Structures are given as C-alpha cells and as structure tokens.
Length: 467
Image 1 (cartoon, rainbow, N blue to C red):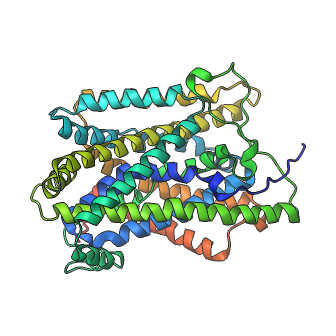
Image 2 (cartoon, rainbow, N blue to C red):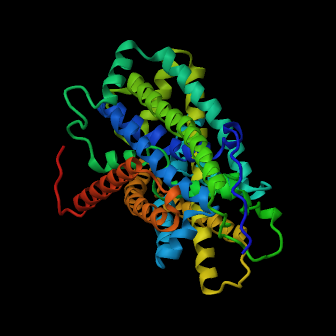
C-alpha cells in the first residue's frame, strides 16, 4: 500500500466548524431545556453540574478527535475491527436514544405559544418534514450543517447574553458564581427533592450526549483534520452519483519525526479550537440560560410542568422590557431547538448509516455501497417515526427528552470505554494520550457507569434513592 503524507496543520480559523456542530447538538436539550428547567425550580446551586458535564465531554470529544486525526476514519470503523457486535450496538442504541422527538416537540410548543396555536403537534410534524428537506437539498450535508449552525449560534448566544445583562441582578450573578462551586440556597451540590434521573439527563446533555459525541470523528474527518484530508464526504440526496464502492477506512502514513511533529501541532490547535468553541462558549451559554431562567421564573408555581418555564420566561421578559423582546426570546429559543433537532437528525443518521455500511462491507468487501442513500434512509425513517408518535399523541417534550437522555447516559458509559480501548490498541504509543488524560477519562467512565446503574436500579424499583 502507498502511504500518504501526514498533512501540515491548518490555522485555527480554517478549522472552525465541527465544534460548532457538536455544541449545537446540546443547545436544545441540556442548554435550553434541562439546566434552565432545574435552575427555575431549584435555583443556581446546581450550576456546577453543567460546567462539570461539559468539561467531561470536552475530554471525551478530544479522545474521539485523536483517533480520527491519526487514522483519517471514524471511530466506528476502528471499533468494528475490535468488537464484532459494535455495529449492531451503535445502530440500536442510537435509534432508541434519539428517535424520540422531544427536542422538535419543545421547539413546536414554544413556537405555538407565540402563534397562539393550542395543539402544537402539527407544527412539530411540519418541522420534521422541513428538516428532511434541508438535509436533502444541500450539495454536501456537512457544509449545509456548518453554515446553519454557525449562523444560529452567533446570533442566538449574543441575544441571550444581552437579555441577561439587562435583566439580571448582582444577587443573581453571585448565586451563579456560588453554584459553580456547588453552593446553593441551604444545600451543597444537590437540593432536596431533585429527581436523580432528571439531573443525570441534564448532566449527560451538557454538550451533545450519548452516541452523538462519536460523530465528532466524522465531522473532523470531513472537515479535513489530519489524515481526514483524504476521506470522502456525504453528498446531498439530489447530488448523489451512481453507486460506487465506498471507502470508509483511512490512509496510512510513515511514523517519523516529521509526522510526529505535525501531529503535535495539529493536537495543539484542535484542542484550542474545541476549548474556545465547545467548552468556553458552551459553558457560557448554559450559565447565561440558567441565570436568565432563575432571574425571570424562579419560584413560579407551574415551572415544573413540562417546559412551561420557557414560556414563562418569554412572558416575564416581555413584561419587564417590551412585549417584542419576550416574543423575540421565544422565537430565538424555538429556532435554537429546531436547529438542535436538525443536527441530531444529521448526526444519528450518519452514525447508523456508517455502521450499516461497515457491517455490509465486512460481509462482502467487494459490494458497492452508496453511503448517502443509506444516510437518507435513516433520516426519513426517523422523521416518519416521529410523525407516528405525534399522531398517536405522544409528544410531551420534557418527558421525551429525559427518557432519551437517561438512555444516552448509559451509551456514553459504553462508548467512552470503547474509545479508550480503541486508542490503546490502534494508535502508536507516541500518539496515545498522556497519563493525566488517561486518569481523567477513567474517572469519566466510572462516573457515567455508576450514575447510570443507580438510575436504572431506581427506575426498576430495586433501589430507592432520596435526595
């Protein structure tokens, strides 16, 4: 085999993109819904959980990026070489964890409150169809997602920040600062009465969550990080060429001083890019949204019912400033939620399509596979499933989001262990993580394993946990 040259690193400006997408995958679940919901009902003493959760995901994502950077292929390809059952697990756990359309239901409910429409399921159905159209018409799916995501984040986050500056008080900022270190109003870390499943759901969705983190390896590959420069891209549904043998595996390179030096330069710049976009902007977004929720709705009697606290926020913002600002807030939230569902649909379809392709190629390496067609099968299959749930009147947003998040917390426990083992078995030692990162990832692995087990036992009635 002819070995390729390990590419020279690009500037951070040219690398911006994948971290915006992975950040946006969490905006509609953890950032906009679950953490603000907890803040509106229990105060800001739980802010530490949001910061710790997204910090955990920063380290998880970087180990995923590490593999794609060196191998020029997704982690799914590598894991499938080691574990035969991995492709079936990823398809099944992804569909179960993310096919519940709670995020788009939340978007539709918020928008319906602006439009004055009582039954929001019809808006949700239209949104799902629009998502399918958006993902189908672009020249390449990645470029479409990157443009939409950057636009929404760079408009939505500053708008939220402006509202927080105008409406928040010094006492609110002090409570937020105290909450970051775990100090709440008459409690430390966890308040009395908080649901353990809800807290774990919010923790898991501090960022992307579940198997969505693994799509970071696909996004950085398609962006051209490291050896991903030589990889293929998923094209739009109406731009697909005739069936051809798909190449999912990466390219090899000679391990020498030049390639090691280039890897280190890449590693430094992609850590910085992910830190700024994902960890810093993500932490700031969650903190601001929690502070805004606390400032406007804390203590209201109907906050605990579904996502009423979001609608309450819009109403109180309108009363405090001008009605137009309350309306704009609800519209921005609805758009951010819609964009998150768009990103989730894209990422989950990529995961399932790639794993189906891997399984088929393992059975017959000479078979011709059009990855784009498989991708769009899963896009529209999820849309159809969501529509069926809505028509059967299964569409309460918070319930669907929490149910999916608990499942995805366990999926994170599994895939964290798999990626650690993959990097250990597949990467030359010089490219493997240092000791301090291994320790951090080990702690994260044990954390999600422990909490997932506790919540599962509680849901099964085997264990009674009181906080």
